[in-house]
Length: 202
Image 1: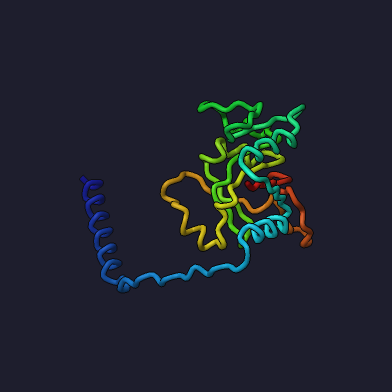
Image 2 (image 1 turned 30 degrees about the vertical axis):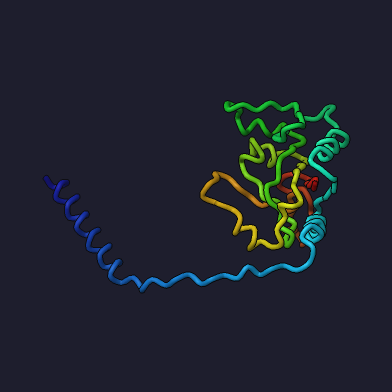
């Protein structure tokens, strides 16, 4: 009986507290309109310059087919564990629904799709769908992303206008390879993840 009365009194106390909180709330205020802050200059040129300033690499080719040929010609598979989420380019690291993401620590090279580029920051937007097993991109030493140059927008504000965050489980902007400058302000590339990021633009 005591426990029942205690639970009822706790519920009553909680309701009184929430009621006071609700009556003390300030009036609702509409969020301000945020301007898009258009970034000047050529979007693709800006993207390449920013990507390279973050130790990334950009390769320009004429078509997606040429991008796939570039991958074939420039990625050495011998002695390497290669994962590919790109149709038309085969890796040797097989992934199924049962694959343990921890096993991605064996991946040397990851090839994935970029969905969106940002000229202002040199960033590439990727999702779980475009990378396949996301852990492969995070564990790999060298990351290659294909990106349609027409999918590059001028600034980060424009990028967020185009992204539906409610439709995905995972999404991230990759801006160059991993790096740090925490220790004595010395810039070190490849500190927490991939040592190189190459974007093949077509």
